[in-house]
Length: 399
Ligand code: GLV
Ligand code: MN
Ligand code: MN
Ligand code: MN
Picture 1 (cartoon, rainbow, N blue to C red):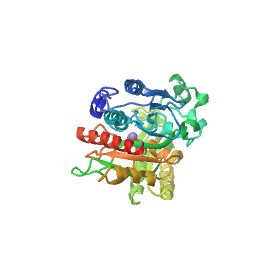
Picture 2 (tube, helix red, strand yellow):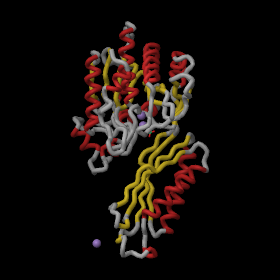
Picture 3 (cartoon, helix red, strand yellow):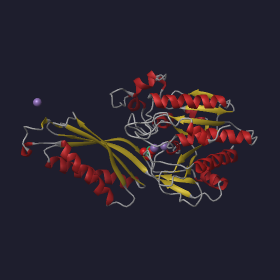
């Protein structure tokens, strides 16, 4: 029997990023692969039956694989330079919950599966929750197989190199039928749980969110010989577009819009770029408002690009509607966690994708600063323990 803190401690050196700080555990890279192996070993030590499905989702069964099982889990991949808890806390808590329930002598009336979803963050192939989108059919398979990472490697090739058969990647109705309910425990990623109150909350909803690629084209040229009056520099347009993204979102209550990644092509200090690609992440509870926000940003970006002698395109890469978790399931969970507040979140999750198909819910664990997607993300040991016990209580109550 291992506590959630011992489980997390056992992976604390996997995928540390010496340059960015924190952890970089992109899907199907060595660190994420090592974490998947770690999970498989941990599950086997607990006598769970482990299978990896055709979409690379790992299922560890307490009891026989069956229809309508209770499923809990999260992900082990991270954003670049992410924290220790986003993902692994939910996986480690699920393993710890199995230990807690076994110690309590619980004999499950139906099977429980602990799952690990690949590419939740979309850090490598650009589409978040890729595993759950493939499983449910929320993404077109052809589109998914053709996604490319920063090196130009396709998802199909990378998946194939990691033991999956691209011919079978995609919607999996049999696997879906096994999910009676899905519960994901996750580190809270805002400041929803104050220092003095309860350490866990029940999720209510996820903001609608999406990703758009903005490509600005100009004239690549020499930094020394091109007069300042003779330039079509997409980097200068990009700088103004980023400010416009912030300013446009600021006019819309509850909107969030971020440019967290930008790639100048070719990317040389003494080179005026010929193109700049930037990626926009935008979120709002009302999907129509988000659509309008993107229209306004695109209009402004076109004006800015034209004024700099450049052109611009905007392409949607993914979009997830606002999700309200299953009311009945969430009410049952709230009943099992007396005193736990109910919280909305601005972060996306596999539970949010699954919620469109099966009753799904979330449990959040306190993160005092609210900082996440950063090395400073933090969960105190006693809160992690409280989270694992809460998950055990929820699982026991639902089984
Ligand atoms: C996932 O963490 C997201 O909300 O981007
Ligand atoms: Mn995340
Ligand atoms: Mn996460
Ligand atoms: Mn030269």
